[in-house]
Amino acid sequence: KLLGYTKAKTIVPWVLSDTAKKTLNAQRLQPTDIAGEPVPPSARLINTYEELGVAIRYVLSQPRQVPLLVSALKEALKTVGWILSETRFGHAKLGDLLKSEEV
Image 1 (cartoon, helix red, strand yellow):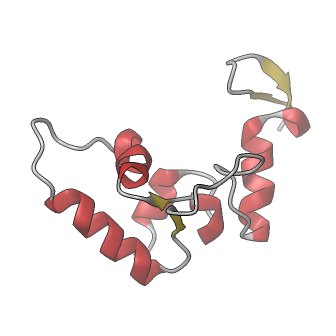
Image 2 (tube, rainbow, N blue to C red; image 1 turned 120 degrees about the vertical axis):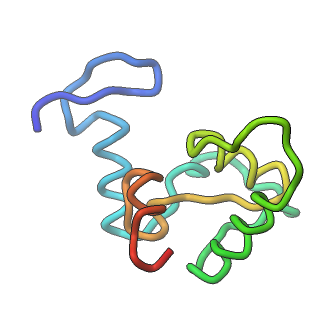
Image 3 (cartoon, rainbow, N blue to C red; image 1 turned 60 degrees about the vertical axis):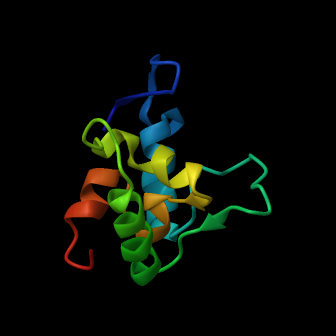
C-alpha cells in the first residue's frame, strides 16, 4: 500500500495514515478510538464478544425514530457509557468486526 487518508481527509504516505495506524493497532489488539483521549470514569471499554453482544442488544432495543446505521453504532454505544474499538478485537474496520463469526 502506498497512500492512505487521515481524519482530515488528506492523502498521506500509507505509514502515516489513520488506516495504517488502525491496522497496526488491530494486530496488537489495542483500542484505537480512545488513544490519546481521556476515558470518562463512567465509560466502559468493551473487551469481550459477550460484552459486545450485550451492548449491541441493549442499543438495538432502545426506541428510535430511524434505523440505526452501522456508522452510528459506536456513537450510540458511547451515549450509554460503552466504548467500542474494533481494533480491540483485531479488526481495522467496524463492518469487519460485525461480520466476524464471533459476533
